[in-house]
Image (tube, rainbow over the protein chains, first blue to last red):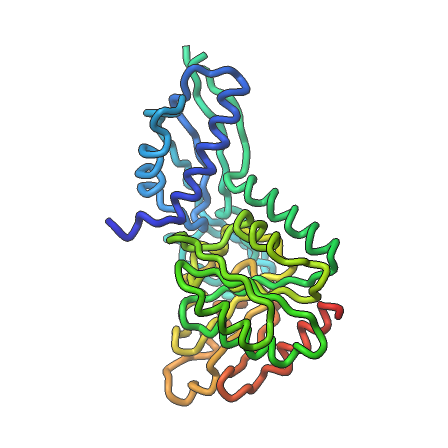
Length: 121
Length: 217
């Protein structure tokens, strides 16, 4: 899908590469083989698009050929009115299923971090 | 033998760090700054024109305009009376903290009280890149439709104020204000909202008052 490949993901992929190289070099890694990313359902990131840029910009670095693993965290909300905790089916925000209140708080779903790396020393 | 090493670092931490530096520079110079975000055509530049024209006597104003190409927006802000800097992102769909830092270097910040930053027209990407401005403001507009809070939750969720522009078009467009407000309330309870029309100038006073209570000339 051409439209999923945006400059947004390029900027994000460059950040991921920078963080991975920094941590890889600090343990004197010969090669970084796997990256474990934690991305909330409400974060606007397209996995395929990040992978597309990753393969291009990691070339020639110790990250070349590394595999990206995306751990998608579902969005969960807590109703401030009745305390109900519920998850979103497809990322579309919905009111509390128990009391229909819209006074809700997002608990998970906004994560956006590099959790760990697998390296060869 | 492969080895797992923990990282646990926010992917945009480098951007966030530079955003904090931008904020420190603005604070030091006493400049109150607003990041204006919206879809293309919502009225970002029109709002800047009106804001500059109406506040130019009280505040020393600067505008930084982000666009993929051209200096049309900065030219309009300058014609309205602001010192204007254009950032051309060269295809990038949002401003980031580094671009703002470079633009701030072109301004003698001590000479200004109020800075309006016009982000690239886009309802997705700018939400993820903090710039370091004091307030993030979203401009929605009636012709975009009442479903936008539901479709772009990331943008509506974290802004400090919402402008609903082009309310003069409400009689002509099927826009369910209750449905719209319900979506906003779901994402950002109690969000301060200014229904305005840049064409008729209705509602602009409330928006300008909000700036005045936040900024100090």
